[in-house]
Amino acid sequence: MGCIREETMSKGVLLFAFNNDKVDYYAMAIATAKRANKFLNLPVTVVTDSSTAVANYDYEFDNVIVVDADRTNLNAKNEVWINKGRYQAYTLSPYDETLLLDTDYLINSDTLLKPFELYDDFMCHNRTSFLMIPDHYQEMISEQSYPTMWATVIYFKKTPKTKMIFECMEMVQQNYRHYTTLYNMTVGNFRNDFALTIALRIVCGQTEDPNHYIPWNLVHVGKNTHIYRDSDTMYTVIYDNWQRGKIRKEYSIVTDTDFHLLNKENFMELI
Amino acid sequence: MDTKQLIIEAKARFNHNAAKAYIKDKYESKLTVADQGGLWVANPEMISFLSSSTILEIVIIDTYSNPVKVNRAALLTKLEKTYHYVMEQWQNEWAALEKKR
View 1: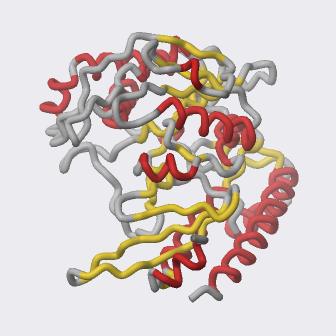
View 2: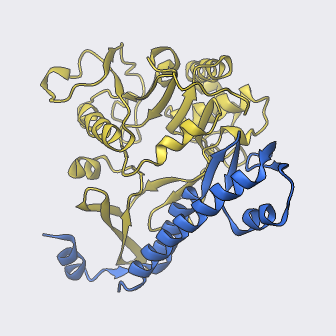
View 3: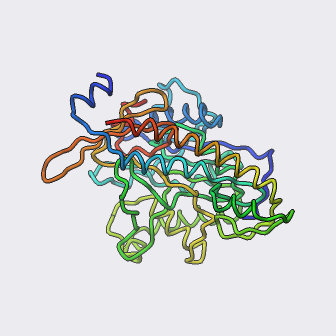
């Protein structure tokens, strides 16, 4: 708390989008950008690499920042997963106040404008909920360690403390093997969520600072859950509930709710 | 195929517990209000507390556990307005979802 809000501060959304052989992250970034323009009325800057075919898309970002992609990370399916370098958000963002979003975050409301009112210089989600799975557990970075902080939605203002958080994320990325051992993490591939969790704890002196938490849950759409669009902000969610070896189909309807769609194919169907 | 047809063909059942949890999440987030340098939840407890006092400026612990000196009446007005608006929407959406089978 304690940061002074200046109305003249520039505000915008920052996305990182690097295509690989399987997923067109740039197309996802465009879809997210259009919805950020529509629901948040904010300009959007994309960070991408030269091999991502930026010329073939019909959307004009506020800024397109080209960087060298770090292709050293693999996902669970052993595919190239270009998620490293998120720490550069601090230096690359052209805005005084930035909303850093994953490209697979589907905006359906103006909820994300709230962090701009909250006076704090850095905020992320520390709690999640899963559509259709009300009792889903909160993820930890390891069994006997800390709850995961989520890099899916980060709000930050350019302050010395925020700079330290991003610099610390860079340090964690560069020494990720050391930190996986230190925190007894089972996941070998680099995750920004884990880097953020560790960095935030280091900068906060290994204490929890609730000022850094967005005061509502990050909504995930997880495994066995499929989203169908009914209207611009209304969706039917169908969930395959496995019970005694059989699938029971269950559904619900969500409206005007932002969510993080883990299934990239499903996201592409919706855009 | 539209989703209504899909639901019929898949013999999908409406999950009321999931719907209830989802709208609780959705509307609780809308009850959060930033005002006068603090973060507040527009809930009956806070509204009752602010209503029960007659002091012009009062120090209250906000959601982030920070003591914040506020203009009591102004905060009360804002929280009451937010509470009634959000609860009305919550009830409307729940009423619509409750009829689903």
